[in-house]
Image (tube, rainbow, N blue to C red; front, side, top):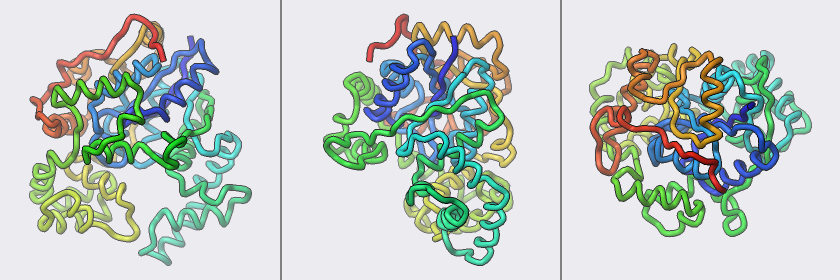
Length: 395
């Protein structure tokens, strides 16, 4: 059996994700559909709104066959780092034939052409010159200018779309691998009723306790999240631990912080802002500068709090943890365990004992345990089992 991988956050798993899953399974019914899913943090530098085991359960109930964890810190890196981590796990599983992702422009040739421009030496040189001449302009704006100076025939919003940037990063990470990319049209969730509604919109409705978010989720996902809320496991928000994060930053050493992932140009601003800020939102606002998007600032703050070293972001993941599986996924798991070059652990305790979980990963789990509505003991995840069912999920 061969596998199809999707690198995902599913924060939360909504009907747009379901649309992609259904499309993949209809076209490739004999393949195992494997999610390499962010753990308890997401790429925008934030806490996942539900923990990884809760979200894995929604994926398995939504039709995925196997859910593996995208190891920390790859889930909180830039688009390039996120894609590198996800593709590295997929490649090292050994039996992944395809990597699937959704896009507003589902054209593989367009993405190959775009990749070869965006990650070219010529664009890198042009971008360096523009940054030197325009140091206060946002990086994304300068990169877009460089891209369209060299590109023809691309949609005007192509390089602005986060999904397209991530797709180009997947294409770069897939280069020189045997995995074939497949693209599916991206469906905005709720487009029949509310054009442009996104996962971010759903999270905002949840956090602000507004009605309507349930309509963007399947009945199974809603039931799972309702039960998690009763247990005090949902929703998880950074605000619950912002004082602890601010305390850590106020007592941090600026020289040390400069060595952490993405922090070199921001360390001074972060340290100064932490002395004044009384909330994370105020901290982000004080650190803010025109050339740095908010997501980059959040990632840098998280790296400073958790001590994510630059070197950690450059090495390939050494292990992954099973978060959920159905019968087909368990069969595929038995198959890949024989040949995979990445360690696959079913019990988190074994991953910790192996020494392959990076120190920042363990620190991240400890912080997340305090961010639940009802804080949990450190190491709670060590006692948590993957969500396993004996049959394939009915969509």
